[in-house]
Length: 105
Image (cartoon, rainbow, N blue to C red; front, side, top):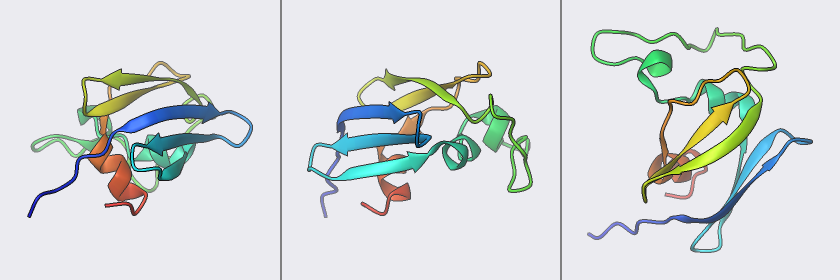
């Protein structure tokens, strides 16, 4: 079985609604609310790595700055890195991860 690899054709930060909108190469459009997106940060500091549990859990309360999306950078051909208003920018969100979170794959 061959898995189709989809990439975004565009993304936009909607500060009024506090969502990241991603348009995919198959025409699908997905939206990611900022706070759940920040909570899902896959970096070692937030999610953990090895025996380190990470610093973000369901009980974590974010400040407005921590959950405000400033910019989004592409990472190679496989993902994006959100840059948050508090300076956090180490999480790489793969396109597969984002599509799965949106129920597209």
